[in-house]
Image (cartoon, rainbow, N blue to C red):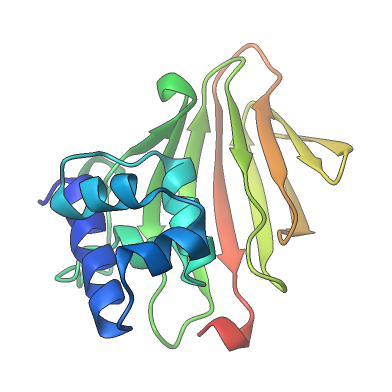
Length: 187
């Protein structure tokens, strides 16, 4: 299996070349420096989740479009075989179980947040929705300055075109699934 930074490098470079974009163009669209983009494309830098989201949002791509291996054709997946992406110094982990595919309007992840862990997500494209289901622990989800506590066997749906923050407010690990539903114009 390829390393995540190799896959992001390949997908970013491919997208940029297919759309006739320079590193300057991509930097202006995403807010990620030209230097960082160049390092990512060369495989010299492992981008954080936040950086991958900035690139995806700036280019109007799904997150998975950047992290999906081009040769991945598996329908049944094991967490142990997925690329683990981390944030908040490793206290937030994201696993892409069902990546975005052409013709589908969603992608699905499993996530884990250690006690006290926080993940801040930037706004997605207009019309994007997230569906969160918690099957272990207690999650605080902040959406537009409103806090929602979601615990085991609860779910929440929200318009994800605004910044939102996931925080583990319990004593144990939070485990859940995240489904991101994209508007048709993004396909």
